[in-house]
Image (cartoon, rainbow, N blue to C red; front, side):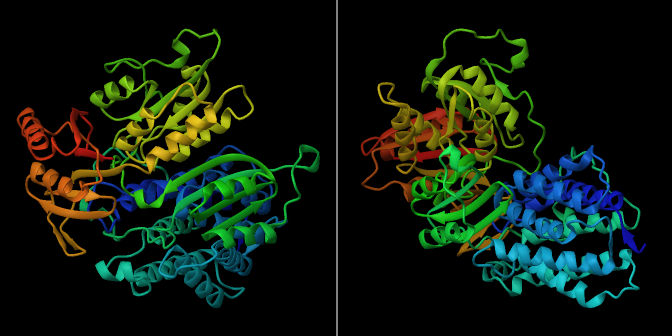
Length: 572
């Protein structure tokens, strides 16, 4: 094959997205830390799927039109750093194809070089040993390899082979990967996309598979890798999309250079992407509010996500496979769930405010209800709530001001996107970016109905900073991290990404994390018991907490029946 038409490129895009979909649980498992958690694959999968859906049922006469549409779908659906960078790779690819009806092999190679350039430009301080390295080394190699006589099939095959070689070398470039001898998971996700594209170029379009079987440890050739995002660890990870406005709308003229300078002067790890009237920003800053105030001079927000990076990766209530969570809205106690279409429409006046919270166990449902949460959204280890779930939850809340507690860093964006649906309505929906169940509970306790909605929101966000969250969960593999030996199926006591201990007994692990978290400045302790904890163990924990900490802090033990975590701990 000498030419790629719009029809062929569409097959390549969809095949790449499908191939990643078929392997994203494996990418999720590629994690330095031996916890039942990992979301790089999911983030990249959702990004690629967004692009694929944009082009799936449309016909295109030119590769330029197709590439632009796919790129825009990726941009709007991008999640996490790997998702953002992936969207930029294909944005550059689309820029190279602009106004082209079809492309030959030389133009294909040039498009991948452009993809690399745009991706690197989008990241203020590119880090080698990541997905950026994989696209750079593979695209540069392809550019040197092709000649006008090279077939499209051979070119894509060579690109894929070089991407694989580059991925295997990522540990040599990034110390954190070298330390544990693994590859970069963002790069692994990109390799799966390129693999699917290469197969389609050879006439074998990858179809989606049913991801119903549990994964085996050897499922991935890149076992043990993690997303090595250098940007982590600095203040607040602030991500937002703004739709640029006009002078008539009271907005200032947008100048990309000036805007980017402000970001770099007040933050780190800046990624700025502009696509016509849409501007997408990722920045790490100590003052996210200032960033948002500055940005709003130029347009209105489509989405906003702010994450405290000291809490990043803390909530590990997601498993290896995420299933469709449509209609996961919890209505009443018990398992019965009803579609909002089946519920009676509430046509009465809107309440002043309401709380919506993500919960993952019947005991947790009761706790949040007692704290004033009006609507619960089901979100457990194997089920991520969709944007549609939150839209329905906001509607059911029936309030002028709705505050959403996602209680999981992986759910913040979908909740934020739901708020965007209501931006032009009489309902103001906002996300309080709680990353853990204890954070969500503490934030809910701060609600003072006598305050203005903006004050309630700020108080809830401020409360998140006062919570130290710990957990006890099981190890999924043997490893050694920062001086702690981890044994598969043993219990780890954890604070954030730090593994405090790994022991055979879950109650002993709880003792270890409590000793680590509690000091003289603490005033309260909450221990939430998971579904794997027996009544005998729960009684043992209650006795332990009372005898060891009853005279030091206000201590409570609740049964939450949450999956994956034997214990969730909140200390204030």
